[in-house]
Image (cartoon, rainbow, N blue to C red; front, side):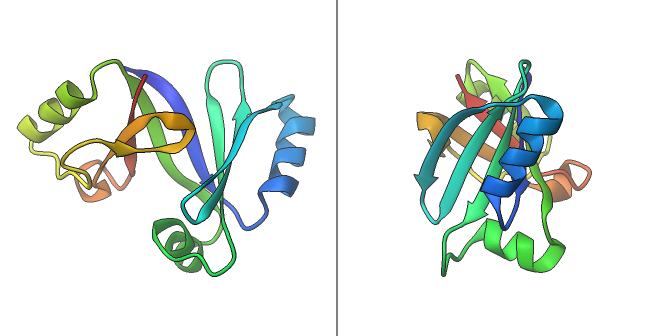
Length: 129
């Protein structure tokens, strides 16, 4: 596995993208509406920042996170070439899974999340490349 991206919950993805673009030289690599989110990927050269901005009246994990914690790192994502095998390893290691099987994610990738209660308080996403 390798680092893929850090998911950052924000109320203003455009402003944060402009800041990261200026300070880090991180251009926008991809933008899309995904479910109730506006998703912007910034290219860091060795991975991405995924900016997650809830659309108006959105409900779900990211809006709940913003209400509870405020803006900040929501999750860390690791790329894998075999998502099913990665989930099996996690399951066999006693990790609680948010997703028992892969589901569609942003940018057309299949994804699955590990529960932060089993991973030191960090929400981990596996991304199938």
